Image 1 (cartoon, rainbow, N blue to C red):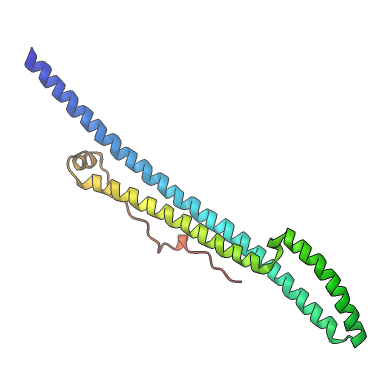
Image 2 (cartoon, helix red, strand yellow):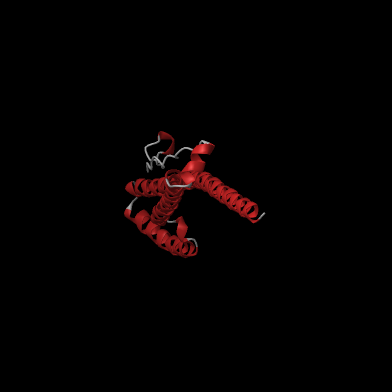
Length: 179
């Protein structure tokens, strides 16, 4: 009777161990899928943030350029008296613009460019972190597939190695920034 109980306990331990390893492999696959989704989220964020910010920067830069050209064109055909009056008017308006710019510093084109540069750095770092997490999870999973005894269970389940993130995939190209 005692040997039968010992055999049953050993069989239960082996079954529990197999289930534990199988669950570990399943958890690893879920982590890889989650990390892959994280890369997609980071790519979407990069595309959304950068394309919108580029449009804002381009629009404001165009506005500033048009304003400067209009001012130059107006001054070309002015008499000295008109230039003096325009200068006085501009100094008065400049004080108002400075007050507005202090309250809304993002209205300056150079600030928009700085914000864009920071956003590019932030989204690229987020994307790199997502890629590193994915590759780390793939590495852990692939290691389980080739180490004993989890390799036996992985082979019986037909599990195969996962590929590391491939940065050359055309679908995952960087956003072209053309200002």
